[in-house]
Image 1 (tube, rainbow, N blue to C red):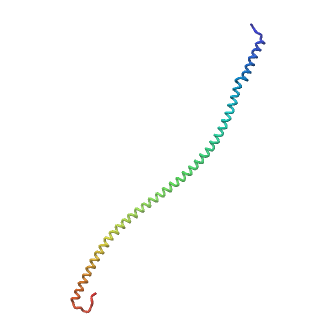
Image 2 (cartoon, rainbow, N blue to C red):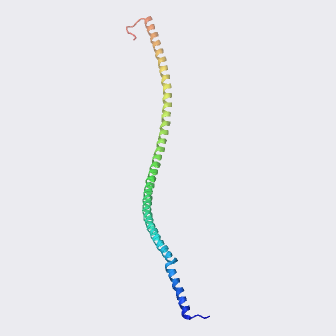
Length: 155
């Protein structure tokens, strides 16, 4: 049962040809379509990534600008803080002066109150003295009326 080698070779050639046609027009065609679809999807993804990259570059620039603005704001804040500290120091010195002034004013008030008491005492004593002087004058007048006058008038 040996067959003719030409028949066997023709059979093998026919099987190989059928396999080649099957691969070319069968599942391989679908694979090529899948590859082509993947190629388009990857190209679309690449375009999307490029757009995202540009967006990231813009966002980076905005972030740098915000950082610069934050640094300027911090500098202004530090200057404001320093000015506030100087103002506080001046206010503390002013408070010290005000306290000293208050002490002087309180001492002046106390001295004035004491001077007022002394002045009132002096007025009282002066009134007493005036009363004594008037009484003395009255007595002198009475004495002068009782005694003969030598021609001189007593005021």
